[in-house]
Length: 108
Image (tube, rainbow, N blue to C red; front, side, top):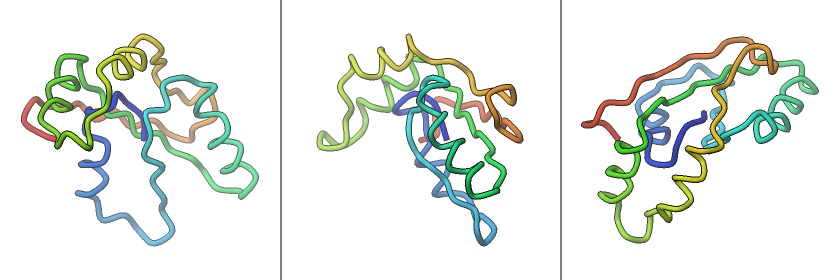
């Protein structure tokens, strides 16, 4: 999983019924260097890694974050930082597939 904090990653995972053996790693993971260790673990275990990018505009992620309980809110500066650093995941970095899920303003 990758995308801005507040994009809806955790909500998307909660709505899935993954097959046995599928594992979701729920984190912002904005750049290739952040995703590289996870890809290395998958390679070492002989399993294919697929990226799910919850693509949400910054304004949507910020609004969702504001609606969270105060103890679950992420500092706005952190979300803006991830937005600036974000590099879309790609097969070129080692993913077997990349799934892009568009966020709507209602979800999450």
